[in-house]
Image (tube, rainbow, N blue to C red):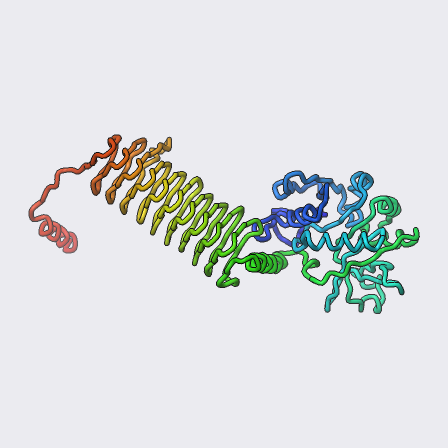
Amino acid sequence: MAAGEGTRMRSSLPKVLHEVCGRPMVAWPVIAARTAGASRVAVIVSPDRDLSSGLPEGTETIVQADANGTGGAVRAAHDLVRDSETVVVLSGDHPLINGEIVAAMLETHRASGAAATVMSVEVDEPGAYGRIVRDEAGDVERIVETKDPSTASAEERAIREINTGTYVFDAAPLVEALDGLRADSSAGEYYLGDVIPALREGGLRVVAHLATDPNVNLGVNNRSDLALVTAEARRQILERHMLAGVTVLDPASTWVDADVEIDSDVTLEPATTLRGSTRVGRDSIIGPLSTVTDSEIGAGVRVVHSYLDGARVGDEATVGPFAYLRPGTRLAAGVKAGTFVEIKNSQIGEGAKVPHLAYVGDAQVGAGANLGAGTITANYDGVEKSETRIGEGARIGVNTSLVAPVSVGEDAYTGAGAVIREDVPPGSLAVSKGEQRHIEGYAEEKAKRAGEVESG
């Protein structure tokens, strides 16, 4: 269910599209349902909210024409429910639900032979949550809504077991109960929990699955809630990786998105952020103070004080400190991209080195090449971006400017300060320099002019 207005977010972005650890909020329950084995997943949406950008591929959408409550949301999916055998109902603004939790609830449902199963938790301060009222046998008799305190007795309000809004139903009796649902509340809404008395009146059993983790009920209504949920999701993500063999030196300063993959024996140093679809190979060390987004890091890589976005780094490569690898960067095994190096849309061959103070853009650099400090590929003329090719084993001297399109052959050299505008043959040395001139008395003349300006 994801048709809520989300007005308390104070945002032009629909509430359920706000991200939690790099994943849209609404995608979390969708993925949980699929992980638990759902063959079909549909998201209930409002007619004026496009959630397509946040939905995993293959997710259906069903429009809830009127904002008339949780019961109205499931009524909008009447045809889908009718064509199903078992229906799981999840909330789009409860991202801390996961496949394991949903699977456990399904197991409770099947083992009990119930027509409906309600996920509940016990809390110290139940507030306005619906209370679970059980019968003498311990089954769920009804759910008492408490948004309007006058509709619940003091005894009912004292109950600490609350409804999380997550349900499992046998589809056939749910269809019949939905058809009989009435908007009897003061808010004019249909409450999904109101189908429970109807099911029981039909002689069917309703049970509760009491969750041990209260975070399953942690929903998002405003930005403060979003921060709280994100912090808990981040903690769970880091714990999962640490239990799988990843060392996190300072969890408090380490951020890892939900879809990041990390092999065992990786070390994440303080103030490291791994975002998007990043993958990190075994024995790599990332950080401190490094951000890696949508990048693939090989095994045994060292990334220090650097920023990587859309890059691929081969095994045993080193990056940084203070390097910036932009989209399209491909570093082969053993490459060094060192201090204050920026590389964009370039392939750097095995064992090549770009040690410091260089910009390499739209380039092909051969294996074993070495680019001296201050190397620049002048790849953009204001209209087009052209390619620079540097052959295997080439040695580019300090402060060389390579004006693309241009190529430097294998094992060729360029002299310090060279401006290379023409292709360099393999094995040759390319130099370029203007004639050095000395202007006698320049310092004295400059000082004299400065004095005249001050006195004037």
